[in-house]
Structure formats: structure tokens, C-alpha cells
Image (cartoon, chains in turn brown, red):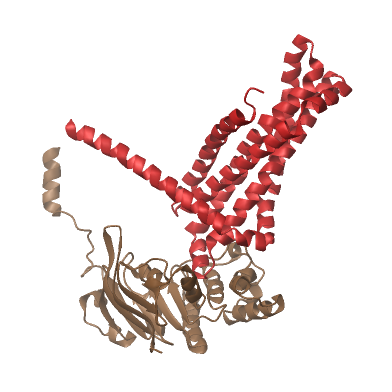
Length: 269
Length: 264
């Protein structure tokens, strides 16, 4: 058994003719929290969708627990997904079900467990995220942070080997940020799962992750431990971590020279 | 000039290719829905829940509309029939109009507006809020779990709604014709009983409403599933469901009527 739960080798992916990922190499060791960071639209979420088998790489290989995700048929892919959990950006809770039913959903779909055992397990998962008392609430009654905690309880319902988090910190208040960050770390350590966190929240994620990959324009531009990244002198990493306005990612969207555009405009008037 | 014509031709070609592609995609979606229907019958409670949403919640609009359509038929029918001294045939006119045509067609149009639009909006929003993706990532097929139960609920509900529309419509015709205007009660019912044939009229009406149910529900589900995951995309898909369903109902009605009641 390989030490790495997820192995991505030389993966490229394009939507039509628009390349999104180019020659990505990435590994996620078992029991670790890995962060994939980068600006909006750089291909981070696409990477998660490749690992989950929702899209197929146009080139290269994606392996999860030794299985080549690209080659799996639907049944084999669904078997693999039963051992994965995913936390979507805004929770993606089923809006017609209560908090409790959301957490119990996978147990009812995939197991023959009696309702009494499902109840105990669902309450245990909800207790782990601190929301046992909210079991009867509907998703529309939850705050953003609570919805994500419920989604996290749902993601760990069947004790997965891997959890993928798509922007788990987006739009949260500082308290919820800390709660979600700590939960990711605690659950990873307590359950021995592997976590892959796609985020652009530098401060919160560097506190909890073991290893970071920086993605820019579809390629990995830097990677290392959180400490190495904090001290990195690579221009992109430096700009990203310190939130600098200008750098390898320019402030201005590419365009013709401003002065010459003004002159050409005035000559038209 | 030449380039303009070329662009125009390219535009036509692109729309035709796009139309054919969409039709193929819709057919594939329909096939997958049929193939994934096992869950809808194995766990029939899922389908029953959807019958409540699509069928039971459409009852009010169907019953109220049916009553008024029947009452209008009573008034208009009496107005015409009494000119020829055949006011007693009012029951026949009301019943045949409703059972053969108005019941299935108007009920289907109302079903498309009430339940079809709701199905599209619900599926579209589930897609926009990543609920369908979440289900896929939990190794649960959204077509089997979400789409197929709604499809069968629509197919079961539509003939029942059309039957209720016709029944309450006949009652509306009775209220106006017999109670209000004073057409003979015995003639109203006995002529209706003699003229309406179970197989030729009632059964054909049920077949029509079954076909409309399949068409409306399939269109509503496909539009929702195919909707761009934005507010604008979902609203556009909802509108398309109502427009496309209404046109398809009317076109299918002509074809079915031509086969069922040709020269009779």
C-alpha cells in the first residue's frame, strides 16, 4: 500500500480549447491535510473534480488509493466515492431535508442499518461538529458556518478515507473560520483520514495544513510545508501570502498602453 | 456581401447542429431516466412523496378550473343547442367535450404551468446549489434518486388530474344547465350515459392525458437538469418548460385526435 492516498501525475485538463490545468504533479500522503491554493479561476476546484472522477483528465493519471480514477466505470467509481467525502463551497445541503436527514442520507442510501443505529451514528457525527442540538432545523434556518459544519458531518457519515474541501472558509465570520479550521484538523487526526483543502484563505489554512501546493494559471508554481511557504521568496507565493496588489499577478487586466489609448480616443472625438 | 451570406449560412448550420445535439442529449437523458427507474418502484415512498408535490398540490387549480370550464360549457352549449331544440343533449355535449378534449388538454396545460414549472425550478436550483453534484459525490445517482421518482409521479398524476378535471367539469355543466337554466335532469344524465362510450371516449381521453403527462414531466425534468446554474438560467429554463410543454401538448393533441377520432 502506497504512503500516498492521492497521486496525480502530469495531469492536463481543458474545457473545450481553453486549457485549465497543465502538467500537474501532486501527492496527498495518508493522514495529512494538504492545501491547494491559488487565485480564483486558477483550476483548484477542477483538481478536486478530477480526483472525485466528476471529470476526466485529457492527459496524465489520477490515482486514489491505488485505483486509476480515469479508467473506472460508473459502478467502480461509485464504489470509490463511498469512501470519499466532499464539502462543497456553500455546503450543498439538501434543502428539502432536515439537518438530521442530511447527515443520515448516505447511511440510508448505502447501508441496511436499522433506523435506531442510523440515529445513533447521525447524532454522533452531529455531536462531533457541535450541532447535535440543531438536528431538527432545516438548511434555510442555518447560518453559513452552521451549514458548512452540517455538510462536514454529512461528509464523514460513512467514515471516508479522504475528504475534499472546496473553499471551506469562503464568506465565514472569524469565529466560524476558526471553528471550521479546527474541525478539519481535528477530524483528520482523530479519524486518520486524508484531507485536501482548496482555498485562497491564507491565514486560516496555513495554521492547519501539513503541506501546500500553489497553483497559478493551471500550473503548480510552488509547494512545500506551511512554514516553508510563509518564508518563501518566490514572487507569486510572496504576493499571494502577503496580499500584495501588484506582482506576478498584475493589478491591471492586460490591455493596450493607457496613454496611447487615450490619444486614440481623443482623435476620434 | 459574400461574407455576410456565409455568416448567415454558418448561423443556420450552427443552430441546426445545436438543435440536433440538444435533441440527442434530451433523448439520452430520457433513456437514462427510464433505466434508472428501478429505485422509484423499489422505494415507492419516494414516488409517493413526489405525487404529493406534483399531483395533490395541483388539485386546487385543476378542480377550480374544471368547475368553471364545465360551467362555461353549460352556458355556451345551451345557447347553441336550444336554437335547434336539442337542449336535452347538453349533458352529451358537456361530457364529450370534457372527456375527449378539454379534460386532458386543459388539465395538461395547467399541470405544465403549476407542476412542470415547479419541477424545473426545483431541479435547476438543486443543480445551481451543487446538491446534484453532492449527491453524485456521495455515490448516489441523481437521475435515479431525484429525476426518476418525479417522472413517474408526473406520469401517474396527470391522468388522475385530467379525470378529476372532467368529473368536476361535468358537475359544473350540470349546475348551470340543470340547476340554473332548468334543462331536464333525467335527459341530461341519460343522454350523456347513452352517448359517452367507455373505450372510445373515456379510455382515449385517459391515453391522451397519459401521453401529455409523459411529455410535460420529461420536458420539465430535462429543462431543470440542463439549466445553466445561475438565477437567469433557472428562470429561462422555467419559462421554456411552460412554453415548450404547451406547444407540445397542443401538437400531440392534434396527432392523437387524428388517430383516435378520425371520421367517427
